[in-house]
Length: 226
Ligand code: DC
Image (tube, rainbow, N blue to C red; front, side, top):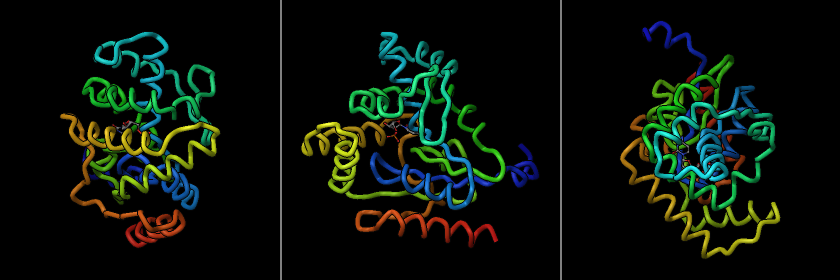
């Protein structure tokens, strides 16, 4: 890509951070306020994991999983995730799929297979993309990069509330343990590990409301865009 074509690409706001840091809620709301498209990149890894489980593909079979990722028949309809015509929005949020997604996401061929699919979400007037490597790998030229964090306890508390609201019963201590384990896997993997881009703005959301964080991101974007 030439510098000129980069300048003409629709703007991207990249929002990265660990599990349950509030990225999803914040990114969706920022996209709504700005009228931008929205990419939940984690959902793609979750869909690969769910499909693998259903088809009995080993989570260590990188080539089979990459082929699956390339052919994934998935669409997004507002906040609904559709896999081969079936609504799987809640199914992909279960802890079993979360753990499997974290393993699948550690495989370089799977990440490579999903790259073009993620970049295709970049369309006018702009995109808010959330995940782990939006600012570092997928959209390194993002107009604004945000890295959201929150304490592990606060993230477990938020996930607990989310799951209880959906009628799923979980124990808080299991959640803290699972979140810590997933953080470790996401940070320590060799390919595209979770880390803050050098030019990302760090926001610790532990004691902030969603509205506070959305306002901070939108204000920063507007001050850069003008
Ligand atoms: O954001 P999430 O919890 O839905 O992500 C599910 C898994 O996918 C998580 O273990 C991290 C991984 N992931 C990733 O490696 N890169 C992304 N851009 C998004 C998610």
